[in-house]
Every structure is written in structure tokens, then in C-alpha cells.
Image (cartoon, rainbow, N blue to C red):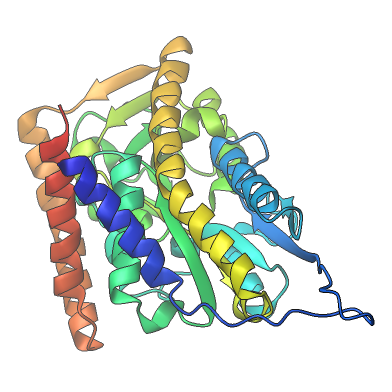
Length: 351
């Protein structure tokens, strides 16, 4: 039953996100026969090419091309080579790329309602975060994402703390420089650390050179971005597990230029890839844990009392979100309640 509920959420989400399917026009040749037009699109992905999410994005593009019979061709540019991670959204809006994949959090304040997705709510896994993010963006369809066509959203598993020094209690974080993005940087501050905002691609060098002494990240990052090589300890902070929501968005003019049948292919393939991305996050987390264990890094578990202290420390972040969205007339309380309900349902469905 729970899997049917999740399937319903996913299908409804994709239908909502791409509801406005335009009417395409067929072009005809001089003799009246229907002409076949090929559409070539560019896709900017901030993940490095060997990262599982870049590979999944490439698989999505290949499936779109296959299902369109080659009429829709997508040139993928991974590793931020077309637009950098924090410029990807604007790059999609401005037509630098037709499609883009990056994090909402890389443009702080730009997505005030969707910031709830990144709150430290104790997200259980990447599949839950991915399904929830896509479903809620579709349900609320806020003004902040207008101007581009959101095809779907995916989100990583619960954030953990990876550091060069052991962190076993809140006191150990004092004065440590901890890298984060968007709200995860705010989490570092709430816990007593010195937050350093930084996109993921810059983090390895920053850790290696001592610019930062730790990072909040999903554990997959320690393998996917090789950051496990430059940290010594991993503190299990899943009790306050945050996620980072990542858009797969399309330039509105590029979308409108496509005939309806090609738009529908994008809708259908995107619906299928919600769970593919979510499952990839879960698998990557498992591999990330195995990777750091293989490196001999210490995994630190917080006691129940210590977890309670950390939860209390980050609660003001949630309250600040509620206050800010209320001040702006946004349905933050409803959005947050929906997210918490879906998290609880997912936990109840897990063995």
C-alpha cells in the first residue's frame, strides 16, 4: 500500500510540474509530406562526469533521445563546464543552457518556500527526499520557480558531518570552520561552528588546504567527490539530517519551442527518473559509507542525549523559516507540515 501511495505522489507531482504542455506545429516539405525536425538542447550539470547523479542525468538524456527516435538530442555538459554550480539556475533562465541541474541552495533567498526541503527534519534517505521534493514543488508550484520549466527535483540522503578533528559533542564544534551550502551553513552556525558557504566542487581543495576543517554533506560525497581522502572523522548526524534539493529545469522558451509530443516524452521520462535518482542517492550513500570505512576513518555515533541537544540547537532554524514565510505571505507552515507527514509515512513504511 505504501509503495502505491508513493507512486501516486510521484505521478501526480510530475503531472503538476509539467501541466502546461503547449501545442506544437508540424512543418511540411514542399511536396506536402511531413518534415522531421531535430531539436538539439544543451544540459548543464554541476556534478563531475563520474558522479552517479551525473551518470543518471546522462541516462535520462539518452532515454529522451531514444524514445523520441532521435528527434530530441541533448548534449550534456557535466562538471559545471557550461555554467558553474551557483550560476546554473540563472543560466537556464537566461538561455545559456536549455536544461540545468544544480542546487536551489546555491542561490540563497531565491527560493523562500522551497527552503523547507533543506531544513534539518531528519530526512531518512535520498529516495524519500527526492519523492517529497518533487511532489511538494508540484503541489505548491510557488512563484519562485516560475520562469523555467521544472521537470523534476531530486535530493540527497541525510547530511552528516565530516571533519579533520573528532566531533563527539556540541562543544567540539566551537570555532571549527565548517563548510555548508544554504541552510546547511545555517545549521553549522546554530551548532556553534563557524559556517563557510561553499559549493560542493570547491570543497575538496578547501579541506585539503585547511580553509575549512569540516563539511556538512551526504555521506556519498565522501566517495563521489573524493572528500573522504581529506577528512579523518565522520559524525553521524542523521537525527538532524538535512537534505539539499536539486532542480532539473528547462528554459521556458526552449520548452515552448518543442512540439507537444516531444514535451510529453520529457514528462514521461522525467516521471520515471524521480525514483531512479532517489535510488541512486541511496546506493551512493551505502557506497560512501563503505568507502570511508575502507579508508579507516572513524564513524562517531552520538548518544541519545547528545542527539537531543543537537535537535534543540537547530530548532530555531525551523522556527525562523516559519516566521519568514509567514511574513512574506507564503504557506510555509502547510508546506512544512506536508514534508513532515511524508517523512513520517516513509519511515513507517521502512522495515
